[in-house]
Image 1: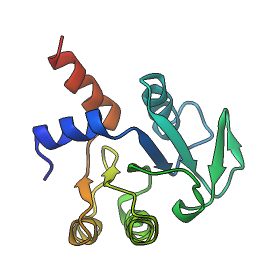
Image 2: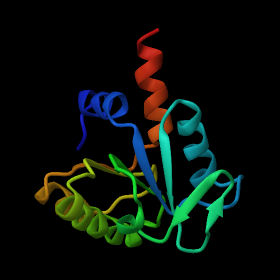
Image 3: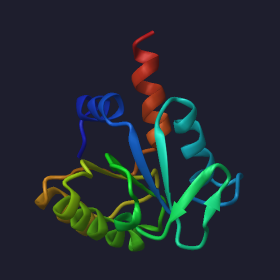
Image 4: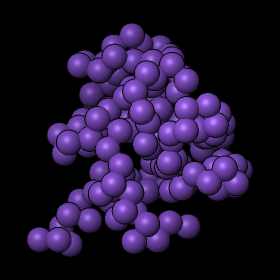
Length: 142
């Protein structure tokens, strides 16, 4: 389980977020959470095999196709589908040396995914909203 201090370090240190499962629908959490994070200075890298572009973001079919450095893989998939992005994150870390964090959005939990990430020295957060955690970190600083 990620501690408050670990979450603070992630929020403050890492800026490039690959959003795995970003939605085209502006009303869905998998769309507006990345928009809010982008408004706070994070670079959003959209991973959605069903789209070439979502608004201003070019989309990639998978993590290996993303040409820029990835710090965090923010996962918006059902709990039972969360293992696949972690497998891709591990492969990417071995190939490119990036991917430091896998973050499963609030409501998403997968213990097999957690174990795989941690075995490969990737920080793992699950069942937490990244934007809410961002707000908590910066509200505490005011």
